[in-house]
Image (cartoon, rainbow, N blue to C red; front, side, top):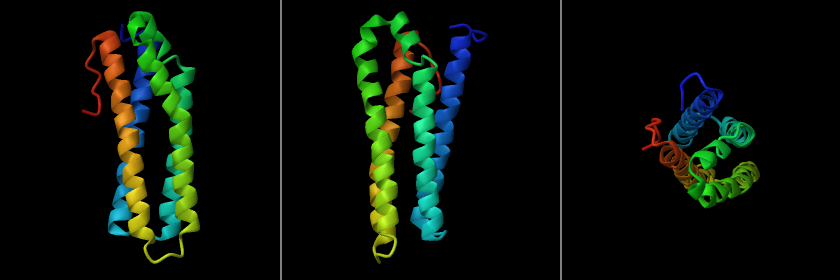
Length: 148
């Protein structure tokens, strides 16, 4: 893939989105671990994560992130379909995390419970993002600076 091609530019934008998501995940983890902000701020960050995730997945789907990969490596279509099927599920999980955090805001164990739920979600999301990066590497035989 040539660096001046529209496909390469789209991939760069999506990879930048991966980095933004990772930075937000780190910020949320810091807030939950250190209990350094109020519960309202923590809930706001979790809601921001859900919003950013919806936009990120929409960008991946709209920009042909996977379609171009399948054109280069048709044998990857099943992997692409599995990854795409995870998008709505993960958006729903992010929304559930926010709802759970918001409704439990008065409970004494809020910080511990919310962090446990967040860490589980974060691990699943990062696993998904690594799988997307590996798929592109496999399709284009590139080193794209993944989450390894």
